[in-house]
Length: 383
Image (cartoon, rainbow, N blue to C red; front, side, top):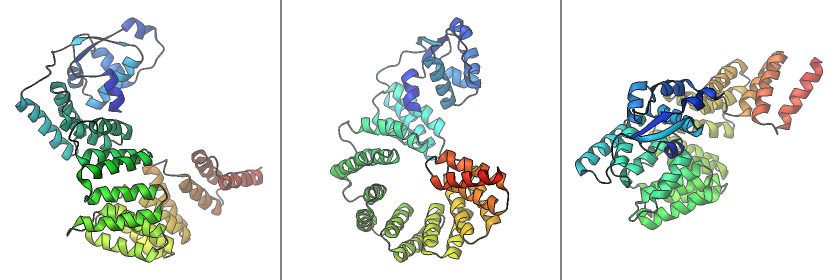
């Protein structure tokens, strides 16, 4: 995470030297990236030169240097140039604009390189820091993003987007009470009529288990989208809130309306599949999941939900294929995937493979007595 790396690699102008005697006497096994950098670090090359000459990405170099520095193998010996507190507006703007452009096209390493150069030239440039926070969120570095947006929130004339992004990062970290406070701050700073901020409040309430409250919040947010259709996220969470309050027909209707506006939203197809399955309409659930997979075949939850529908329909071979694809995309998706794979293998008299799957399930969910009982029963029979 860049928030940690920055503690050791504070600037791309830093020049390091390797304590080779200490490195040689150490039993620490270096990563391939660390070994490559250790050969290049000579007390003359700065971090930028190490990136250029190593052929490694900016993040990989930063991570490797952080590890070497933390282990005590690096010594800071200088700086390649004196960083000025001020720089010409044109130069700062050039790097900033490049960073933003790279971010918008998904070129995150390149974006970070340009945004960090802004930081070197003008350390307190809040616009660059804002986009560094966005990059952190795209990398799922929620702690790093929260720290950046929390710092930006202390600056004068804070825009509501700072609080909104802070709330999102906190919500992803499970710090739901703090997320609500950040959303209150967004409203207090001009976002009272912002549909996305209101939607975010509904999401946090939903995650707090307050389904009825979330349902009301999300319903009130709809009017603030104006003439445009609500976002796919709004339909997704509104449908979930309706389902959690027991109104499955309204939940299905919301999915249908949402998919009419956002037909390529794989996540919304997934929500539709989940709710149809909950209603007991397995065929509609299977069709919804398959539609989602045509939009994005790399969404593990869709494969898992398709597997659940096929499993309940007794189509075990197809369910196995779906579960195995889900596990391949995300081997930490959940114990339920491996539990059901084990059940299928057991039905097919493949007890050894069933045990292997159940053991994997139990490793992910050690407190699950049902999995443990299945294992104990089959082991006793085989013994």
